[in-house]
Length: 161
Image (cartoon, rainbow, N blue to C red; front, side):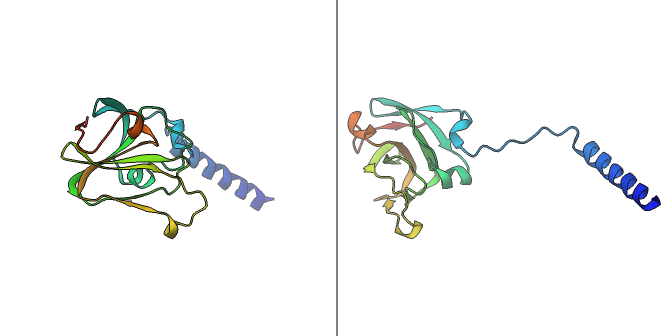
């Protein structure tokens, strides 16, 4: 009986310590769908069109890109910025819809890969790679058809926020 009482007292003390230690911490919620949390967007001008862009400003955002999202609003996109111009390689890992990939260097469109299809069920080593033809300092991902619909072409100016 004494050992049961001792175990109960110790358990109560441990519980009290845990509750005391975490009493001022806010609960943490992790979203499994990146589109659930509103992300601040900036407006980019490309040619005569404007696009609200989410900036991929961390290694994790750059790695994930628009992957695992179900859709992208019209006239919205994701902008990848690099500190120095460099060759860039993209793939459609985790994508659920097709994209136009617009490669940018020195404030101009230098290449457009139109209608890059999503590749559900394709193993990572077999996914198609999209490679810049020259070093770039930014890449814009938008819905497939955006470049055609808005007359975006190589040489168009890009004003990055």
